[in-house]
Image (tube, rainbow, N blue to C red; front, side, top):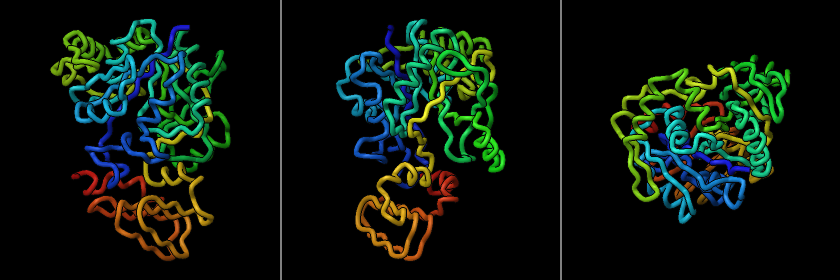
Length: 347
C-alpha cells in the first residue's frame, strides 16, 4: 500500500491561550499536555510507522525556525513556507500541488491533543481507503457533551469504513447541541481530513477556480531552499482566503466521514486545557502547573505560573494564568472570550 502523506498545518496568532501563548510562540510550540509540545506530539503520531510518509508542514515564515527545531533530522521532512496567511484551503492546496496526484494526504492541525494515537492511526487508515475512492474525508470526532464551540457533521448513509456526510452544521446553541448529542447522529468536526491530492485540486478548481489558479501559479513560481519550499509571494498574496470547509467540503458531492473516539481536544481555550489535563487534577478538580501555588477551599481551578506565587481562596471553575509580566483571570465560561481581550489582540 502506498504510504499516507501527513500534512501538518502549523501556526496561529497566539490569542486564545494568551498570555502563555503569544504570536512569537503560539499554541503548537508549547508543552501544554505532557513534556512535548503539541507540534512534537503531532509529528510523533505518524513517526516510525511505514504506513506514513515523512511529514510535510505548512506554516508561515515567522515560525520556520521553531518548526525546523521540532522536525530535527527527520528524513524526508519538508516545510512549505506560506508567504502570508490565507486560511486552510490555500494552505492545503499548496501541499496537494507538491504531492503526486494519486498521493493520499492526511491533513492534521499541529495544535490538537489526541490521547489515543492508536485510534487516530486506525481512523487514518479508514479515511485513506475512502480517499482512494475519491471521497473527501473528515474525521468525525465522538461528541461526549453538548459543545457549542465546535461545528458538527451529520452522519448520512454508510460507506465502507465510514459514512457520507449529510450536512455540515455551524456552532449550535446549547439546546441544539443537546439535541444533536441525544440523536447519536452527529459528530464534532475536528478539522482533520484525508484527500487524494489530485482530486482535492480538481474539486477546488470546480468550486474556487481563482484560488486554484493562483495556488498553481504560486507553486510553479516557487523555489526550494534546503528542506523549505517557498511559493511565489505575489500570486499567493492575491488569493482570497477561505477555509477548506467553506471552499470545498460543504460544496462537494463526495463528502464523507470516519467516526473516531480518540480523546481529542483542540485545546481551544483555557477551559479545554483543564479538561485535557483532568487526569492530573487533585481530588477537588484543581489543576496546578508551574511554580508555587496555594489553593484553599477551591474546586475546578486551573493555576498556571512561570514564577510568581498564585494564592487563591474559595474559587470555583476559575483559570488563573501568570506568564511573564501578564496575569489573566477568567471563569471557565468566559474562557472563549480571552482572544478578544486587548492584551491578547495587541500583544
